[in-house]
Image 1: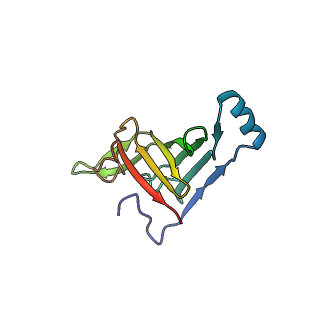
Image 2: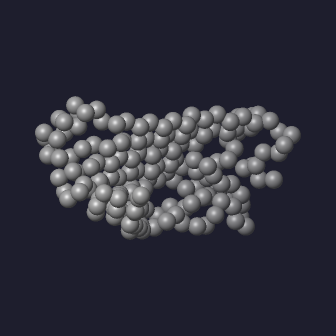
Image 3: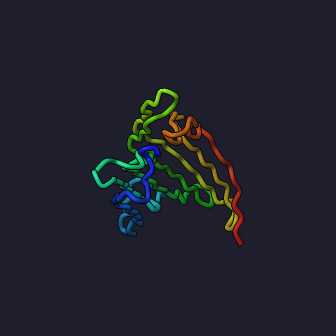
Length: 167
């Protein structure tokens, strides 16, 4: 069995710290921002931090193809002065280095270095119940592997256009 798996008879431990944070800007902060920037209103910044530490009974790291640390930061801003309201936003997704041992016919260690990916979005309210959306993923076209145990690259720069109707 590879050193990535844990046999049932072997003891192991796992520690982690998942944390999500959201913050809505207070009315007074939004009012101050409007005075300085016009009709710009801050939306809901959000952050997610995850820590994953899995070790065997001897303290050796397990599941090294899963990042020990990940961080996601996203925020949006609504600009009410543009038409029925334009919302723009962006985000950053980061993960720590991962590796897999005994890869290929030579049994080498394959390492994916730490990387980050930037995403952007825009949403425009056409009428009250209809909005158009634009999402741009991987803005800087970062090349990374989806996993150190596969040879597949992550999604290159891409975009999505959408039309949302609510009733």
